[in-house]
Length: 344
Image (cartoon, rainbow, N blue to C red; front, side, top):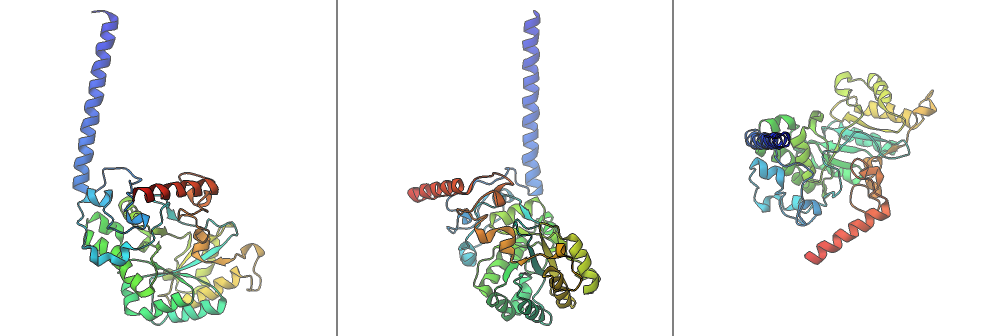
C-alpha cells in the first residue's frame, strides 16, 4: 500500500470517528433535554407572524414550551394576556441593570407591595417630591388592595410585575413545576392588567433569581426584565441613615436603577433622604452626587421607542446584538411589516 493510500485511509477513519462522536453527542443532548426539561434548540427563537410577540394574539406555543412538553391552557383564560403589545426587538436573555440614558438619570424602583400601611405614605412622599417611580408589585397583594394600585396608575407611576406570591422562579424551574410558573407569571400578568387597565411591560424576578430557562420564558412573553445596580439593602438595615450611603456608593456617574421596598417602614425616610441628595437639596451635597430622577422608561430608553421596533431603535438598545442606524432600522421594520401584510 502506498503512502498516499495510507493517508486517504487514515483520513477516512478519522472522519468516520468524528461523525460517530457527533451523533452520540447529539443523541445525548436530546436525552438530556427530555430528562431535564431544557430546550434542545438554541435561541433566538423563530417567531411566526402570529406569535404574540408580534402583537397578533395566540398562545405562546414556541420552542421552549414545546421542548418542555408544557400543555397550553384554554385560550379564553388568557384573552387579556394575548392582546398585549409585545416588545419585538429586546435581545434574548437581556437583563437591565442600569440606565441607557445619557443624562445620568437615576430611576427609583420599589418592590413587594402594595402594603396597606406603608405604600400610601410612600405615594404621598413621591407626590410631594415630584418623583415618578416604578412599583414591582406582588399580585397577591395587588389583588387584596387594588385601590392602591389604581392610585399608582392615576398618579403617573409605572406598575411592573413581581410574580403572584414572590416565588423563587429558578427553584420553580428546576422543579419543573410548570403550573406554578404559569400562575406566577402568565396568570399574575392577566390579573394585574385587569387592575391597572394597562399592559404589563416590566418584570423583576424575586431575589433577582433567573436562570436560562426563566429568561427565555419571560422573553417569549415580551417582558423586559429589570434588575438593579444599587439598593435593596433596606430589608437588612431597616434604617434610612444606614441605607442611603451604600445606595449612593452604588450609583455610577452614568446613573442607576435603585431598588427599595415599600413593605419596609423606613421606606418614606429613605426616599426623602435619597431624593434630598439626588436633587441637591440636602446641605453639604457634592455637585457630583446630583442626578436627575427619571422614570424607568426614560432610564432604559423606552420613552424614545428603543426596544420596540420603532424608528428610534438604535445603538442604545440594540448594540448588545446588532447595531443599526435609526433610519436603517426604521426601513427594515417597514419592510418586515409590508411583507407580513402581504402574506396576511
